[in-house]
Image 1 (cartoon, rainbow, N blue to C red):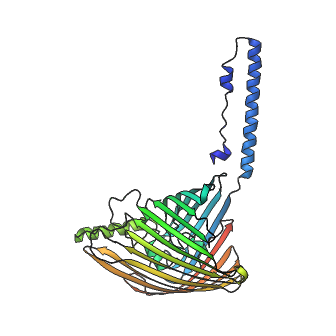
Image 2 (image 1 turned 60 degrees about the vertical axis):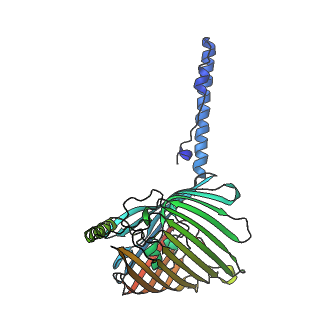
Length: 413
């Protein structure tokens, strides 16, 4: 934080000394003034740095996420047995009165190896006029409902199957966002983003564009009354690097499959596996809490539908990747909550001159116990059925803990 810890103070004392007369007495006097001026500047700089350092109060947070899983499952980042989940180390603070900054590093296991990845490192404006805001760096896209939320706030062990297949669980990337909150009584925001698109590239793409993904979204929400709140959203994602270029040569196809597997083994599984040029998302959330107090008792119903079209530049067809989920979570007491979620995904992988269809249906039930806002233990049962995915026909039991150390940003609606 050079602006805070190393304030840059300029001075013209040297240029003043250049105007000294040959008079020795005047010269000694001017030299004394110069040394005094330097001393005052150093004192002022030290005082400024002290004041800024006292004002600098960043939030440090550490999310610990671990689990035991009874068996492997389709489209999952978590393997069978004991394992670590999404461990986050975050630092955030207002940089000054104009900018806010945040860093989130993630430690995770992939193919038996522990890896570290920067999930967020962005700055955001705080004082643009008229309800505008700009975010730049690496951050979570604000498309859909779940994608803009950190995974440790979820009510289930993993994101729905459609999210895992089409957004790599949660889509974050390097880019810039412009958002605008309309001056209306009902909450209404619109925004647009541009990203590099590296996490949303088709597997066989050889010459991707440096800016490959553009998004546009709007969210509208409000309160029916003191106990009932709602939010609706529509999002569009244009992915210039998303359409596959399938080879007609079998040997090249095999080579691409092998290369894809090797590449996947060395990259994080947050990359989307099913991509296309145009993705549309619709989401809806309804929340109920007696007297508006969500701490003691609440019910949350949510759902999203995702659809991706234009899957290939070389294979003709109207195939589309699509999926949805419906979720219900009931908090009975401040400590106990139960939930159920059902979701489906149907996608197509390009092979030679045709598509191979894959589909997955997922039913999940969970019960969670939270001693406080910072500690949760969750037991979840997952049942999967489908075609084309490995480990898709399993009944999975997962025991998970999610613990939060330190302060972190408030959770979104």
